[in-house]
Image (tube, rainbow, N blue to C red; front, top):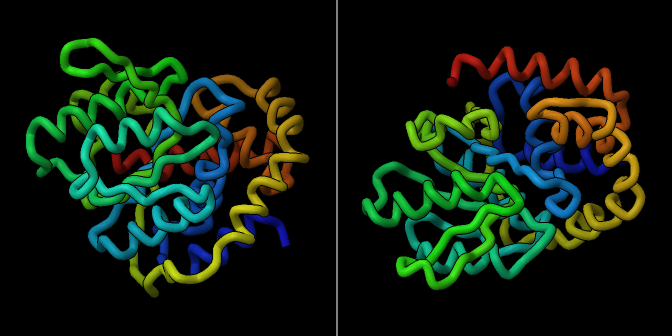
Length: 239
């Protein structure tokens, strides 16, 4: 079974997405884009009224990359920043993202999201003494349309919105997801060159998403272009 199908099966057991046929391949592709082979990153936002439904997917992402699941409420800003700066080839999973955070923490977090879409993105300590790399893909769980914040006007096209409809079953954090983590690593041993070749065939802000979808779903680049275009048309209503 393709890794993409394995991941789809896990998601479908836990959370129902809106227009799943359109949004599920976008979700899987966005989670798989390798940070080490790209210079600009997406922020995938799993959005919906049910925290359990949205957090299920973010928890899956943490297992897929074998990284710590972070919370915007309980984690400190410095802790999140340092966690990113110490790692490479990762995806940062962040739950409980809300506009109701304490003002300073909210401003720091949103600034980190804003500059973190570029490989060279850095945030600095208050006295500008130290700079921390925060550029990497991120996946967030939220009940709010945070991407509409004015602060994100110039990077709004870096957001991938995945709307959820219904919570089905809790993510089993005690289950051994090591095989998925290993499958992701093994996938890139053979797919890195294909991904890079696909990148050469497309332009625009979604070129990485298209190149990734073609590689992981074993479809042509033109087919991936069509699927991403259909998604873009669907998701317009959320912007």
